[in-house]
Length: 120
Image (tube, rainbow, N blue to C red; front, side, top):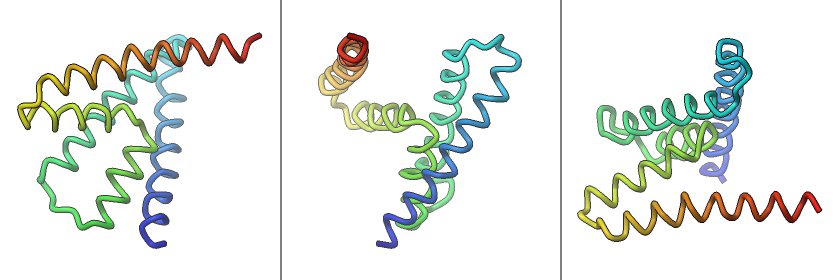
């Protein structure tokens, strides 16, 4: 139960931070939400890299709070990038290519399919 609370608490703050960054960035990006999303995703990738890189040793609860919860609530793109990095660092280049292609192309196709299905 404690683990769920750590993830939930981190997710709450990550989601609130995402909203805050998007609101602040939209004011100087002329309302272009895709740029705000890109900014959030890039910040999230840097943050998860810093947290997972070992600069500070995290306990299991801190990992759940900060990496799974905070970064996951802020952007799942950071987790996508981190998982890809782990595959590359392990020399699993074929698996990385498959993971990357299925995630990006499959995600776009499924997003379009869901959009089309729900707009009829």
